[in-house]
Length: 173
Image (tube, rainbow, N blue to C red; front, side, top):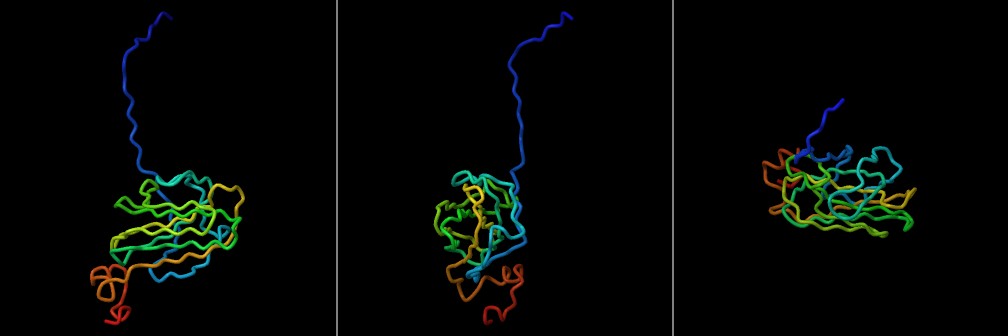
């Protein structure tokens, strides 16, 4: 039709919200020891292949919510019963925007038991992600344990105790 299209420089800008996680209803705390799980249980999603640290993990994931009651080291151990089961472990921090996959604090992606230690801040929410890893069809059981530095003076401050729903007798007060 004789129309011509002019050529010239242009810019396209796209801003996307951070990719949100889908945490399960499961919570863990500093007293969690040997909590049994299986990557065939209900609540696993297949929404994320990367968390911002570690490598790609194309398998399904299960996310536990953990609110720190300590300022200090927290160690999360994922005991894997069968060495043919490939499970990876990630720690994500809620920096105020909820659970977003780009807020990865630490990752462990071995073919053995996974152990991660990180510096936690009291009152901060973290998401502990168990991911099926890169082996297609990898299925199996695991146990998760959380160990925390001892809180000062026998427990978290009163305002945090209240927010977390602890009662004074929980800390011998």
